[in-house]
Image: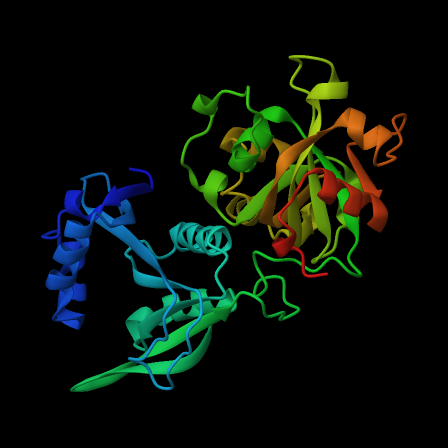
Length: 353
């Protein structure tokens, strides 16, 4: 089953998934029942047999965190209250991290924090949080056992690292590009950026749709000049339901994480493994690798969707893009990028400078 936001009261607390949490936290059942009575909700994955596979609970706090050493002063914080994954080796951890970052930005918090026991079994979670800018800043003591790590992400800090700064991005000194994406791929890549009259039935809660990383395969050899840290503005080409003047739009800003040409892959299986979370069908990806002369694979971080779609007409008349040029892939000036951001009413908190 797919990721669901469920009330605690509808989740089976007797599921074996919760056994380790009950063992680690003697007060877990009491806490769980209290949250259920309050109507609290959590993000949950169920396996094919209906058993809980992954679980994420978050809440907003504004008071000082006094049960840790040193005490964390009062701030607006998002606490990751419970986060457990059974599905290691998948991208569900990444999907949950996106939920955490989306919540943090929507709630305009100063910090996000999580407490984790520093054990070999949980090193994968510590590594996941560390990659996204969480640092071990305090400890939460427990009587009769080792203290938990308190890992904190400062949502205002600038680490000059595209992963640790996520979902924010640095703009100064970065190359900016417009990348055209066909509607059938765009819909699945960027679900937040669907036009109002697109069918929401086309979008399912699948990994390529909801993950932080986006894998895009291009046949434009010019895309090979992309570098990590470059910024991409996604341009959804016309869907044929009207003139491109009004139906082609820019929707999203992403950060380039990695770019590979066909010769960067050891073999077809290496390529296939790298692109397995893309939106493209397996048979298409294999066929494309056989005819791979201009193939470029772009791995990018999905940072922010525009709250207002900027149509081709505005891009020409107000931003100054060349209407006679081919827009499949082209560089933007800093001024053009800034104008697009302003016209798209993108949340300025996502941009570091």
